[in-house]
Length: 482
Image (cartoon, rainbow, N blue to C red):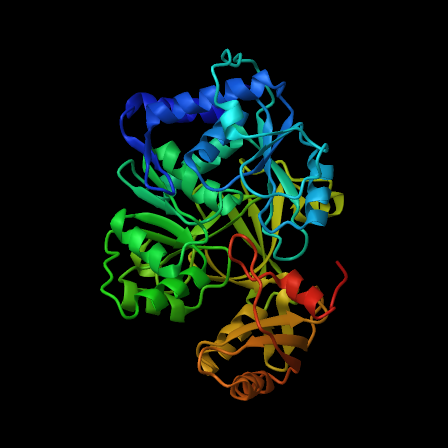
C-alpha cells in the first residue's frame, strides 16, 4: 500500500497541470502541478522531523491552500492527521491529545496544547528544501477525524486511503461532478464536511476548490459565491436560511450553482422553497456520515422537493423498525464495501454502530417508495404522542413556523427511550416578544399533548460544522454531566 490519495491527485495534475486547483481564502491561486509539488515539500519536511508511517500528526490551522497540501503530505509519508477542533476547550484538547498521541503538532492558530506535551512546528518550518520523503509501503491509514459531536464529545474514527478514494470516486460519479465544476467551501477544514464534500471531491475530479473563511459574514458568503461562479457547495439547512436572509433585499444570481447540496440535519420543505424563491437554487439533499461516507442523495429533478433520497450506487440500505413494522419509520441501516475502519478507543460505540458488516446510523428514516428514503431525525430524538411518534426536528420546524424567526430546539428528557417528556429551548426571533414566542411554541407542544417545559435562551450553540450543539444545551440546563 502506497500513498493512494496522493497518487490519485498526482494523476489529475498530470492531465491538468496548469488548471487552478485551489483558490485560497485571500483569493490567491495554486495550480494542480504546484499543489502536488507543495505537498511533496511538506512531506519532506515531515519526514525530516521524524514523522514515519503509522505516526499521527495533529493540526491546529486556519483554512488555507497549505492546509490542503499538508493533508496530502501526511498521507504521502503514510502517517495520519488529526485536527484539534476550534471549539475544543483546554480539557477537550487534553483528552484529544491523550487519545490521538500525536508525534508532532503543526500550528497556525491558537490551541490549548500544553507546552512540552507535543513538539510544535509551523507550516513555514516544514516548507523547506529537505530531501524528498522515500516512497515506502504503508498501511494506508491516513486520518483520524472527529464525528460532529452533536450527540456528545466527538468520537475519533480512522479511514484508509484506498477506501476513502474509492468512496469519493463512487460518489462523484453518482452526483455527476465534472472537471469544470467550482466547489465553494465555507466550512473549517478540520471537519469531514469540508474535506469529503469539497476538498477531495474537487481534487479527485480535477475541479476548482474555493476556500472561504468560516467566520465570514452571510453577505460576504453570498457575494463570493456569485463572484467565484460556484457550481457546487454543501451546507446545512441553517446556512441556506442565512443565505436566504442575506439575499432577501439584494439582486442575487446563483444560477450557476447546479449542485447546492444539503446534508447533516433535517431539511424542511420551507427552506427548500425559500432557497428556490430567493436564491434561485434547487437544493439537492444528501445523506451520509463521517464514519460511512455518502449513502443517499436526490440528484434527480423529480425528487428535489420531496426530500426522497435513493442510495448511492454501491450502497445498500434498509430500515430496522423502532416500535413495530407498521409505523413506516425505522433506524436506517447501511452497507458498503468502502467505509471507515470505525472508532478509536470507543468499543461500545463500535459494537452498537458496526454490526455484521452493517452500519447502524442512529438516524430515523421513512421509506417513501422505489427504494428511496427520507431522513426525519435521530433515534434519540423520538417523542411519544397519542397520535404516534414525532421526531424532535419535525417538532422544531412546526414551532418555527408558528413563530417565524424564532430558534427552537427540543431536547427529549429520556433520550434513547420513547418518551413524551421534552425540554424546549427558545430564542425569540428579531422583533418577536419573548412572551409571544413562548406562547406560540407552547401552543404547538400542547397540540401534540407533550409533557413539555419551555426555557428561554440568549443563544443557541453550534458545533464547528454548524449543527446545533445539543450536548452543550443539555449541559447548560444540567440535563447531563460533562
